Amino acid sequence: MTTLDTAPVAAPAAAPARAVRVWRTLRSSRAAVIGLSVVAVHVLIALLAPLLTTYDPIANSADEALLGPSRQHWAGTDQYGRDVLARVLYGGRYALGVSVTATLLTVALGTVIGCAAALRGGRFDDVLGRILDAVLSVPAILTLLVVVTALGTGPSVIVLAIAVVYVPQVVRVVRGAALAVVPQDYVTAARARGEGTWAILRREILPNITDVVCVEFAMRASWVVLLISSLSFLGFGADPPTPDWGLMVAENRTAITVVPMASLAPIIALATLVVGLNLAADGLSKAWGVDRIREGS
Image 1 (cartoon, rainbow, N blue to C red):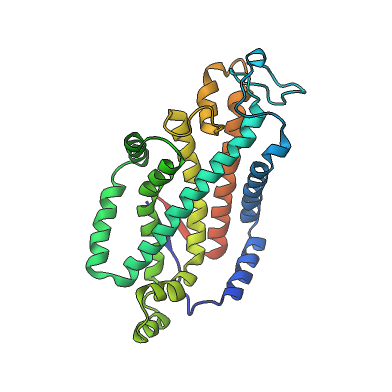
Image 2 (image 1 turned 45 degrees about the vertical axis):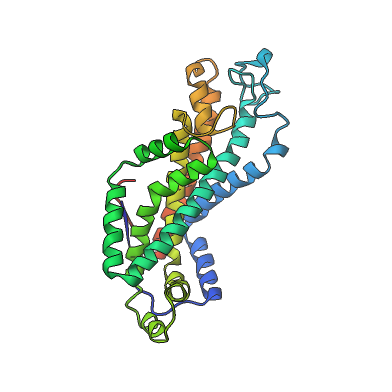
């Protein structure tokens, strides 16, 4: 469970002012700059994968199986004769595509529900809290395995499974941040004007917890990437021959002494992406003064 403590903001900041504050924050935080730069490199490589290699990532070639690094295959080939570097480059597309989609859905749902719980309070908040306790009592990996076993594999199922696992945690984080904003005078004034719940959330609360949501997104994204790769490694994620980092490690672990790069290359790619996301989250949290107390995922 993750908790965040933020100081209340005097009034909602205008969009240009928030943009300037974000830019200054990025420039002042070395960790955030390094982390976001690493992530940007991964995104760029994934987008340019067809231009960076001429090999088909799923094409088999029995004559070229288990080859070491060479001019033709910079990272060698796997047991099916597929170019390892091509699969790593294209694997970034799957990892980033599914992870970003799952994280966006998770954070969006968690933010709306958490803000609504903080704003409405009362019985709605109490019932929601008990439901969250029940969901959070089940280990994340167990919940994921149950969902994918029941519904099958595929990107859409994985996105749904990630949402089931992490939405309750995001709700708690955002609710804690929103509770510091709800008592403010401008929220009270909005209520007095007769504005609806959604209007208050969009105009008064969300602009004042943007920093919390951004940090939460970066932090959740790193965990989502690891969970998706773990599912693929266990055989519940990407279906062969999809180029996926977790699947690559699972397929080539038995031949690691023969062609170590077939396993090490996707591990390095996964590690650098997760480190970049964690650096971005840590740098932004420190620059914005958002306390992050990790008590387990």
